[in-house]
Image (cartoon, rainbow, N blue to C red; front, side, top):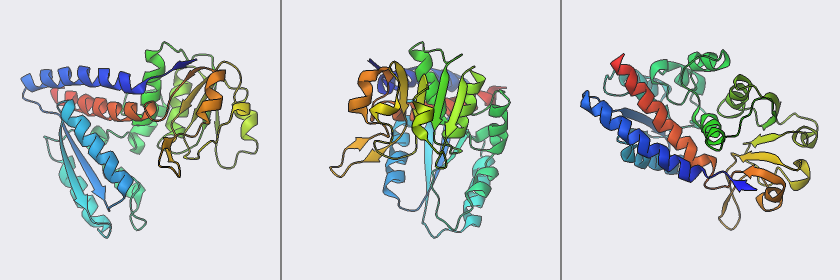
Length: 281
């Protein structure tokens, strides 16, 4: 069993991105990322601080637009319009989830697709489905980079993606399809989850339910990617996989924390640098 170390790989990627940022600087370009943070959700604030720190290490200028949870949708849209037209900002990130009175779809659709470094705009979603270049959601992109780094070729593998969100599950499915895997995708209405995961060479799970994937649900020699993040009663951060009992059956497995999480942030930085390069075109 080998652990897929996302923390180590993300650190290496950040060093390379800093070099790219420095080269862009020779052309008078400082990559810029604008983050919109609505409300006082503790997890969202923590994520944004982590992203801000990561941007600094990669030579990316970042600005955070903090807004109260009572902010109107119109005010958020006005801010996005302002960012879209700012030539010094290459990427726009709206930290999710948004308050219930805000239409998340309208907010995402308002972002300039060329600055959509989260890869959530329908324009970029469509390009991903069609196998064309564009911005890909950071978490599934990070999974693919992690697999590639460890020379794990998914072509021909039977893959099972557990979770069908627009942020992780659906783009993960499309990336795997584009790479030649046979993909089975499961969700809350799937009748027998074990029936699907047990036969998979590659299991990717990200639903936010502790110990969802147990030892009897994974075949011997499987590759397991755990995207889930949960906090135990003791305050520990764990994934969706019963790691202690599942890991011995795997050829490769990601830890939580230290697996996919750091890769998500690294891919956000990479997408921002990619957007900054577009200024040279």
